[in-house]
Amino acid sequence: MNDRQKEYFRLKLLAWKDEILKESKLTLQALQEENVNHPDLADRASSETDRAIELRARDRQRKLISKIDAALLRIEDNTYGYCEETGEPISLKRLEARPIATLSVEAQERHEKREKVYRDE
Image (cartoon, rainbow, N blue to C red; front, side, top):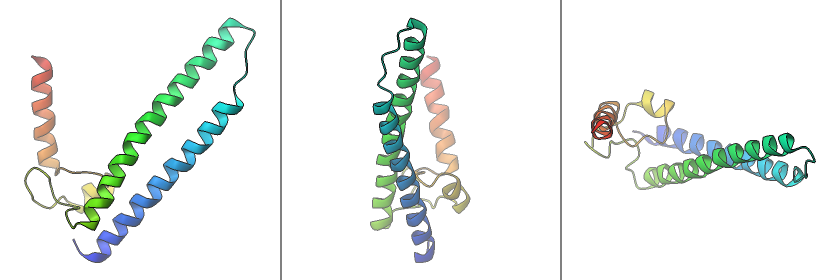
């Protein structure tokens, strides 16, 4: 991967992280403002369910940010774009679709098949 491609992915990852952080701030503001005590039990339950779903989504995004940070570190140490399992380059198409990818398509498929086999047992 050349320097121009690395810079492209670095900027893409930083923009993605920034977008997630902005969404997170908006969610926190909305949750704080929504701290209304609903007199109706059904409304309260609905509000709590919405809050739980939103918090779960934010937790997934927090984990995604750590994967983005790990990808940025790989760019810095020149290991970005190489499969962790085989050491072979990950295709640019895959990185474009999933910039945080650490496995090539083939290695990911093997990983998922092994995971499925162990889950079925």
